[in-house]
Length: 97
Image 1 (cartoon, rainbow, N blue to C red):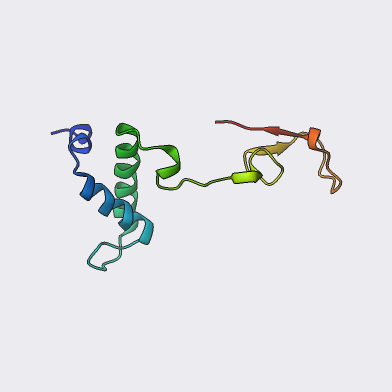
Image 2: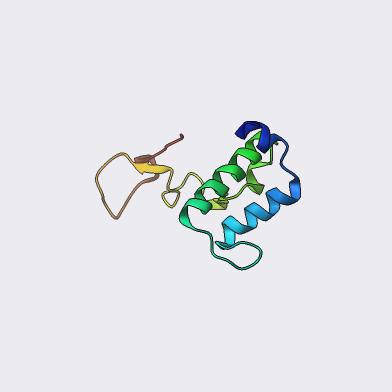
C-alpha cells in the first residue's frame, strides 16, 4: 500500500485524532509528539484535507484574516515604497502565492 492509498482510506476518526495531536503536540494518551512525529502527522493531515476537499476555513493552520485582509496588517501585503510612518493605502500591494 502506498502513502497516497493509506491517506485515501484513512478513517475520519483517525484523521481527527491526528489533527488534534498535531494541534496539542501530544498523543491522545498524553505522550508528547517528537518533532518527526509532528511533521509526519501534519503532512498526513494536510494531505487528507486536500484529498477530501475539506473547506479551507476548517483546515489545520487556517488563519481568518477577517477585516484585516488586504490591509497593511495583512502579512500578504508588502510596501511598494520607503518605510514612512505616514503610509498611504496606494503604497501597498497584495502578494498571492
